[in-house]
Image (cartoon, rainbow over all chains, first blue to last red; front, top):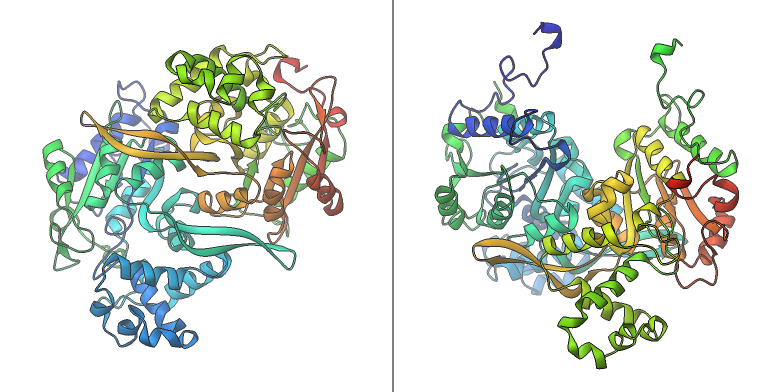
Length: 320
Length: 320
C-alpha cells in the first residue's frame, strides 16, 4: 500500500491510543474495534449500529472529593444566599453557609436533592446554561486548583476519538444533570449536545411577553442512574449499544444491558488505582463506588482499566 | 467550473426537489437552505447547529381516516381478544370487537388511552418491536389498500434528503409512539432510531433468568404533543432547531420555539388541500386539526405548503 493511501486509523503506522500503556486493556479495545469494523469479518457491525456509551463522572473526568456538579451547587448556594435570608436557619443551607459541608450532607441524597433543586430550578433553560458556562470559566478544583474541564482523562479522550474514527457514534449516559453537561461536552469530549443523556428536572413551555421560554421546575424528571441507564438508552437512543464504558456500580446495569446483546459486545470499567496522580478508591467510596461491578467484571471477563498501570498520563496537561 | 467538480447539490444543475412545483413554497425552502449553508454569508450556520425537526403524522406520512398507530392498536385488540374474554363486556373493547369503531371512541382520548395501554404494554421492548414490524409487513390501509409505509409523502422524502445533503441533522418529533416509529424510520425516511422523538410509556429494567430485559408498563411516560414538543426537543436534542416542519395545531409550539431563536429560522406547515389524491382538511378535522396554526403561519409569514398546488405527486409510487 502506497503512503499516499495510508490513513490516520492505520493501526500499524499510527498509535490511536498513545497515552495507554501496551497492556491487556489497550489490546482488548483494539482487538474489539478491529473485529467489528473489518469488512468481511464474521463479527462486522454496520456503522449505524456502532453505538458507544460512556458514563461521565469518574469515567471521562474526575469525581473526587465529590461530584463536580455538587461542587457547582455548593458554589451556587453561596452566590444565591443574599437573596435567601431564610437559608440562615434552614438545613442543609445553614450548615453549608457556615462552611460545614459534612453537616450539610448529613441527610445524604435528601440533602443533595434539596441543594440541587434550590440551585438548578426557577430560571429559564437559557439562563441556566449561562450560569454553568460562567462557573466553569472561573471555578477551580479544591485540591488540583485546575479548571474542572482540564480534569478530563486524556486516555479516554483518545479512546473517544479512536472510536469515532472507527465509525462509532459516541454518547454520554451520566447520572449527572443533562443541562450541566451539554454546555461543554462538545468542546471537552467532541460529544454534541444531542448525544448527551443524563438526569433531568422537568421543564415547562411558557410565553413571556410573546416570547416562548422553557422554565426549569424544582421537580425531578428522570434519574439516569443504575436501572435508569438502560431505560434512558432505550428511550433516547433506541438501540442497544455495542460498547459501554463506566467506573462504578451505578454503571453496572448499563454494562449488563450492553453485553447481553447478540454478537460481539464490549464492556470496560475504569478502576481508580492511582492515588499519586488521581485518586484510589473502589468498594468503600461514597462517590463512584465500584463493588458489585468489580466482581461482575472479573467474573465475566470485562476489560478492567488499572489507571496506575494502564495509563501513561491522567490529564491532558500531563501529555508527553 | 468544470463538470468534474460539480456536485449533486448544485442547484443550477440538479433539482433536489423534483416532486415540488416551482412555487413560493419550494423557493422559500431553497432560499433558506442556501442562505444558512453558504460560506461567508452573514446568515451562515455551522453544520452542528443545523437541526431540522419534523412532525410525522400528516407531515411525513398520511393520518386519515385516523392516526395509523390507532389503526394498529385496533388490529391488536382483535388479535388479542381471544386472550381477553372480559373485553366482550368492557368498553371501549366491546364496541370495537363488534366492529363499532365510532362507539368505541365515544370517550375520545380516554378511549384511545385505554386501547393503547391494553395493546402497547405488558411485553418486552424486543417483543413489541417484532409486533410492529410484523403488522407493518402485512397490514393495508383501509381505503388505499396500500402498506402504510408506502403512504409517506414523496416531496417530504426529497426534502429530508435535500436537508441532509446540505449538512442538516434531521429529527422526527411526533405525538406518536417512539417505539412505534423507530422500527421503520430509518428505512422509510433515512432517520435513524436515535433521531426519533415521540410519546412514550414507561419501561422497567428487569432480570429474567439472568438476562436483562426492558418491560413496557401501562403508564404514560411523556406525551410529545403541543407544549410537549419544545420540551422534548430541549430534553433530547438540547439545541433549538433551525427549521421545523409540521401540519397541525399540535406542532404550533414547536414552530414557535424554533422561530423564536436568534438568526435565520424556518417554519413550514403542510396544508392538506388535495381531496382527490389524499385528503383535504384543516380547521374542523379530529385528526391533524390546523386552525390556530393556519392563522399564525399567515400572520408570521411561515411557509404554507398547499399540497394540491405545490406537490406534483403525493406518494412514492406516483413518482414520474
